[in-house]
Length: 252
Image (cartoon, helix red, strand yellow):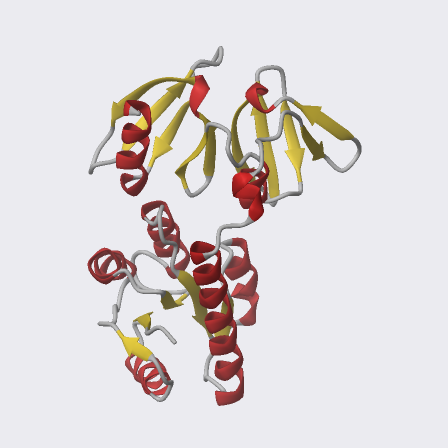
């Protein structure tokens, strides 16, 4: 069993110490340095790249949800698992909108914590299996047509007609030359359907057709923007972690 690197972001000392205690009792878990603010968490994430982050929803300055969003934008190759911690179960929805693996209510119950750890180990194991054993779809021919269910009809799309896709209000917006099609599929599901075709995750929230990129321009802090060939010359972000891979893709 591989070692799990865990990080905690919690501004309340007692809650932070309780989580450290629970994690240190777990086998094959190493606790990374803890953060007390969202800004500090982002810095520590870049330095340590933990497998899982336990983060308080409400922290001074950058909130846990905002910090998770920034980390997600940085983590192109290896997304950490998020577990939100809060004293109010109303925040559970925020956790799952960010695709968090779980959430924990304070004060922590040992049995509930064990369920969370079980979920974490299961997801990390699945990620490792998928990495080591590519699925058959990676060797199949790319799809020439895409069937998209928008809730009222089944739309048949040629993949090349897609400019980009982005999640919006619990739906997935698929932007084509002629229209915007909404679907209940996730961005990850669409990416899997388009495997083998020239589509690229420039950012956690954007899947882009490389054939429709007009230009790539520097932005700030190592991030870039891309401009598409559509009539509006739509500009989309490129995360720092995706930038190098994207530029190398065009050199091939």
